[in-house]
Length: 314
Image 1 (cartoon, rainbow, N blue to C red):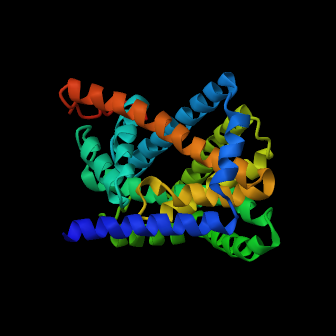
Image 2: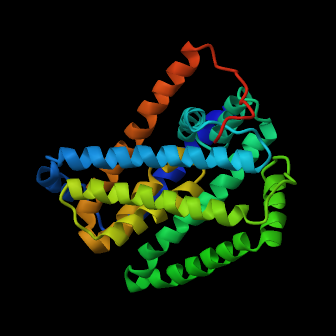
């Protein structure tokens, strides 16, 4: 009964917050129905290009995680193995709460000779730095939006600037990282290099540029030309805000609502609503189908437990 009550509360929060945000931009179902006929025939080449770009961004995230594992003193994980582990673990994002993906990474990486604390620590600190990178791109969604967004944009600018500064100062970053590990129940690591934080942030900024660019190409495929920077910024900002809604599996609902909110000033509420729904289906399909293939291969091979070799490169 307790579990059911928690699930009901999570669903109510997800629906309530989504409705409040969508209602704030005045989006109505009848407007969506009248618009769908105009974008029912997407450019298949653009859709394929966007999908390849998104999948490449997922793979790049996996490679960065593998690099962080190595930087934290773990073994070198070949890129193809890191991708397999990361994509399978990503299936845990669709379960309410943010611990399942991290737990999956730790369990799967253990079979490659990676200590649980190292795999978990890499996932936790990597996600934290990735959120800062996504927020950097997402600043434009506030600062280029209506006047009512400016206060939150300036607040976000202060937060992001402070985060970049803290990550860039080696001693401060090491101190905060150790406390971040403790706060998330993972074992602190003493092997943090002086410039690891800067390197990880730079890689994740490029990574999120790939995500945002893929989303822009998707929008172009449906004839929605809202500008490159507004599209990339809206995608990053909606991801960050959807992520903090821990009660929503993979941010479903709130993320789409925030995407509508940020895109409405540029392409209108109806087009934003349709694009938000299309983007959710697109990101889910591109993520889940390859992850399912990796999972099938993982199981069919008897859950490969071969440890990473010292000579293997990440």
